Length: 187
Image (cartoon, rainbow, N blue to C red; front, side):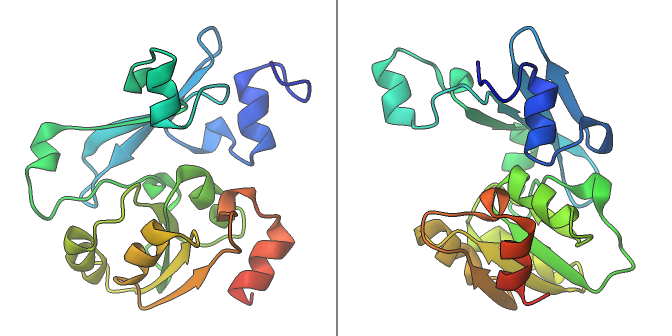
């Protein structure tokens, strides 16, 4: 248990995520948060679990005898959604404002939460495959701005953005301070 927080809810709040503002189930006993993922049409398509004290690395988890569901992050998407070639599941739709003209795209849910705290439209795509994302983004009719990890996955996602910002190496938007993020985005 982390000395700075004793409950999972406290941990989520320490990362800027207020469970009252998102579609999330918090299981304090098992210390797991389950976030719901939706399609652009608003259909529940899957979920991502988050265990803050879990092992993030898949190969390390295998060595410990853990199943994928027991890792720090586990994402499930319905097979009905997966087999549709243009379906994309995202996190953050519950905070989306269709009246804005810019869509910020990030890779992880805590990255989207950080951008929401700045009042920006942000979704986490939880994947980097440009093929379905290209059509998905064009359907929004908004300028698409990536705020991406400076790694191969982030560079792959950059291919489908109108413009993008790369985080400093080893950092992502979710672990940057608000001031650092504003500086990066030139806000």
